[in-house]
Length: 289
Image (cartoon, rainbow, N blue to C red; front, side, top):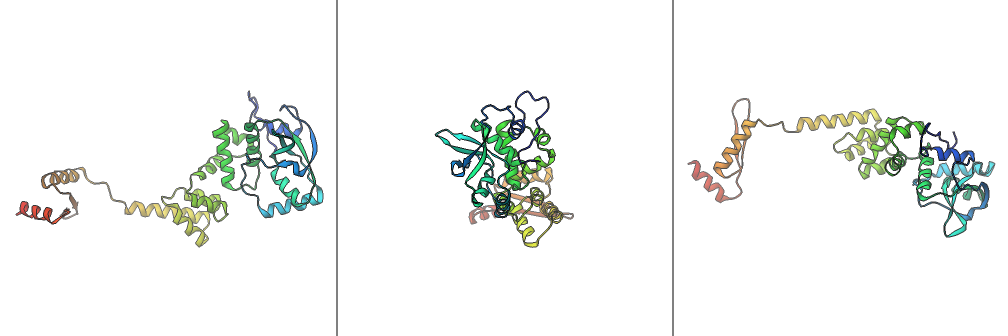
């Protein structure tokens, strides 16, 4: 499948998710403003401020650079004109090729120019990115979230169009709820998406994540670690207290004017009365004697 390939949703009344990408790839006229394929000087191209991708791996760029040196740029970049300069273009899709082409020493690049609004440009950039296999999990998750929040697409629609399962999309979006420290570990590759999903179920995931990295635990071991944390918290948490016991505590506290705590045991129990000053203690002794 090409980088930008996507199938239109059958029967969609509006421009369905992916229809714009298919039109752009095939050179069709579904989108207005197409100016055809042309070659422009590489210095006339600018990266988009709407680009959702944050990381471009060095190894990935190096491999693409060698490919471009050997075969050239085979797929045109999708661009739109900059409003303040007729001979300058903003890259909508293909920034990775543009970066690699610079490293390969290219002077010109093939482009297809389209008249796109900011909304259309952002949507196409997001669609192009989420279909790539080398995005970090958080980049992919953020792409799905923006397609849902900003463009009104559903998880089911995204799953059908992008050829992914709904659970894959839902699980990735959940990763955006991780603490910042865990998101950094995920972006750096210290944790996999599977590790991160398991840690989402922890009450305090940060120390567990450090254990996972330090001990080199796999996903199943991480799931077991989270289960152990839950069990420990369950055992250490206080049991729900008997309503009659609480009623006696309230009655005694009201009579004495001090906090009272009853701790029943199988045989007998203890009665604790808290005081904050010697004066309170003297007053309590007077009452009891």
